[in-house]
Amino acid sequence: MKLAFIGIGNVGFALADNLEKKGHDIVIGHNNPQSESVVQAVSKNPNFKIVDMQKAIDDSDAVFLATPFSVNKTLLETLEFKAQILIDCTNPVGKGISHGLDSQISGAEKVQEWAPGANVVKAYTIYGFENLMNSDFPEYNLKPVMLIAGDSKEAKSLVERLNDDLGFTTLDVGGLEQALHLEHMTLLWVKMVRRDGHHPNFAWGLLEK
Image 1 (cartoon, rainbow, N blue to C red):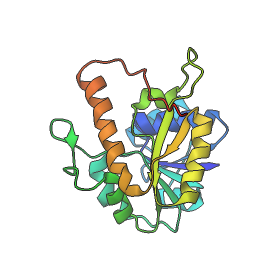
Image 2: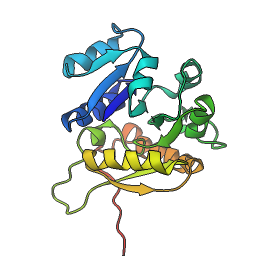
Image 3: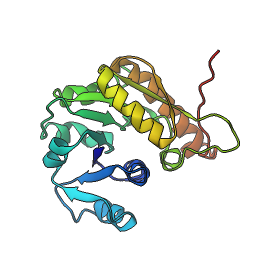
Image 4: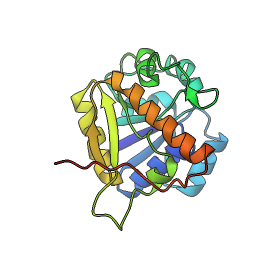
């Protein structure tokens, strides 16, 4: 697939680099090719291409949004989506590692509001970038689970195929309103790892009878 990335920091690069190694074409959508994050990403993986944001969106099979949540409204309202799949990898984090929208609405629902032409799927937020770089847990006969939420079955099906390439089992938790609960899982992970010092190399598993 041709995959566009808007935002290429720790999370964006981990996903882009992993997916490029699995055979996908990666495009960084950025209007400033000399941006520090873009230069660093290309220095680590010279197979990435850099194009204007709107062209990246227009020409891709799916777009990853991996920016700081605080810039999403201003950024997305300058872009046009025509039913493209927009994978929301961002999180609204507030003071004291709280939910940045006071748990009244998910950040993914706001992303859908700001990009009304897109088919938004919430994914890749319940772990830090470490597990997006490498999802292997060879001592277990079980893949880690990636929880996703969205209103478009077609869009979620594409994300499931990407999850397969990344080494995750997919659990579809429902419509986009369910993204609020995934964002709370993000806060749990961040508090455990970034605040309290738990190592990042753990993941959730799905066990079913």
